[in-house]
Amino acid sequence: MMKTYGKATAIVVLTFILSGPVLPAHAGEEAKEDKPTVNLSVDVLSQYLWRGYALSSDSAVLQPSATVSYKGFSLNLWGNFDTDEALPNKGARWNETDFTFSYARELFKGFNATVGGTYYSLVNSRYDSVEVFGGVSYAFPWVTVGVTGYREVSHSPGWWVQMDLSKNFPLPCYGLSLDLGASLGYLVLEDSNYSEFHAGQVFGALNIPLGKYFTVSPRVGVSFPLSDGARREIETVSWDGEDTHVFGGIRLSAAF
Image (cartoon, rainbow, N blue to C red; front, top):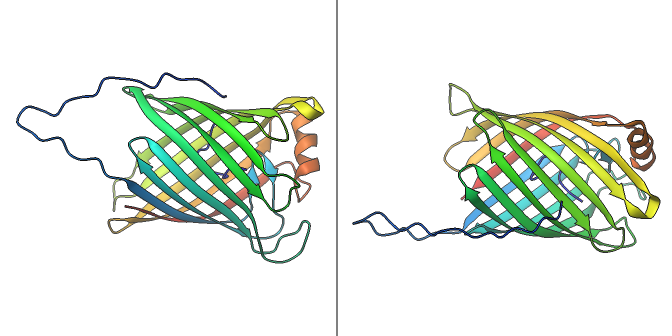
């Protein structure tokens, strides 16, 4: 299962020919060696939301993440810890671990493509889950638009197709910036013949740098159904029985 915010948030299995020219170093300059990057974060959130579904109820969740990237390849480890899990057992519990491998490339200026796959290790499910995904995005001067898709390839065949809109606004003091975003998702569940415009989300986050490497980001948002069929589906599956969810929390992140 995926993070509430957008890591990615995004998603149709696409096939890309990710090729392009390698740019030489400028004359008289030696090309710099690429180095791996490491990104660490932990979210403390009021609720675990995934594609419109609430997968926690009346409890905060902690969601740590670690990503190592090198020359477009990335390996991410993500998890969810429910401080008072409602289903199926009461009490604090680690109930999900995700492993994601991806490759991203800028095909031309402002236009990016990503492909990859995710393995979901799920404590509260009979089966683990495997998805493959691919997406494209383009950075317009006023907004970045992305379309991505996931295809479940293990036990519950289906599609999740998502469109994302996002923009970062630098603020005029202390290196602060504001992230604003929105997403719309279409869900296909082949086993149950469900096919609907499913869930949307809007959110905002204030990024506060703490020195060279660290950032703290309070955030707030709302997730909502996009159709009557989606409202019934989300109410049935969500642990709290609700179809609309207001959420908030804070992220501490570090980049090296």
